[in-house]
Image (tube, rainbow, N blue to C red; front, side, top):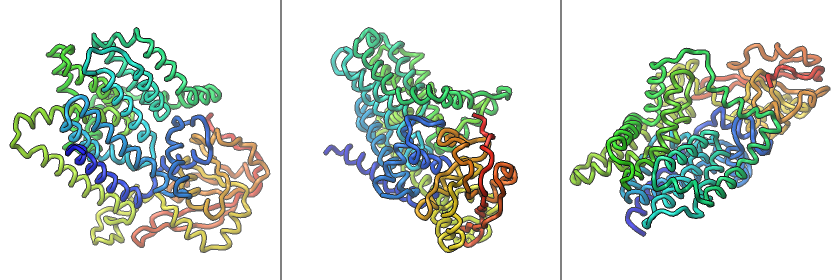
Length: 520
């Protein structure tokens, strides 16, 4: 084994160790518990996303035999490790082993990458993996040692892109980037005259069939929902776009985020000044087409709509290779300098320490006021949004101690809630005790609108679940649908010995009228 491969194994191992620890103790997020419900409703695709995230969540549950925060994240832990290896191999192929190692280290350290694609069960994990596979195959295909001729590898690239599109719709932008590279590179335009490209296009379309079939059956609701997220009545604000950029720097960690964005700008400038036909510049252009479109697109859109931090992540993922190549160029000009090592190690230490503190606060309330176990009461519990991340084990234990409540749960025909993410928490908590189907009575039903029909619950009894923080006008707003609704129990949820949430349960006696509050 080469020395660089040993260092790559060390980076992957340390990353996996840290991410596994976080995945073990960090309570599940809103989206994660909602995706757990995907595993209970297998389908070709879903309202919010294509099917890959549901498959990812189901893998760990099947392997460990039960659903928990760790089991839902188990596949993500492995997916990100494979993606890191892919980045290393791309760097080695396009530039050098040192570039591959530096790019791998940056990707392993950046918080949004390790959390959004490497810890939490989100569509971004499979997206990053399959996009990396496509880029790795592209690096081999487009930069051979002999004069370029299209090969059957183009089919593999198209299949990998198709699987990326079955992970998250952002992959279409990455695919457009590869097409843009081939169009702007004189010696690669021959791709479009190759039978392998057109066979790959057919394979790409076949990969999309689950997505197309499901959406076609549902009046293209998923595509309409996602495209609607970029609509806004707000006037465009350059200040908001700059704010979105700064927020991305924060999630990437400033010592990494600012250089990553700068690397895109530097590469653009270099390619403007020098002919793209130079082979080394072609390699930069290849990575630029994978990174710049998605980063610039969503950064610009940040001036009009709210941009989630994971939306630009695929672009920054490939920008790690641009930055690594530029860093190694500087390193070779200053071989005695230790700045690169200090930069990477210092960033890693800072990220690990701050991440550990954040995880400790979310799980155990390390900085909570009152109740901080560290004696650092800095964050008032009532102002801390992390208290909304429920711990199913605590809910399950509290309910198991109340035989009267368990009896009512057993007597119910179904469960219902008023927020799309709450049923996921309650399902994780109660399924080992009294599993029942869940539905949602609210104006944002997401997938629940396709997992059952309102008429399915007529004449049946329900236990209605909500929390004090998200109760709003519920269940008063649905009283007309039931013969009667009565309070069942309040289940307090504590952190650091202090009550921070209250689960509220109600009994809905015989549903009389189908729920009609869904907008689709």
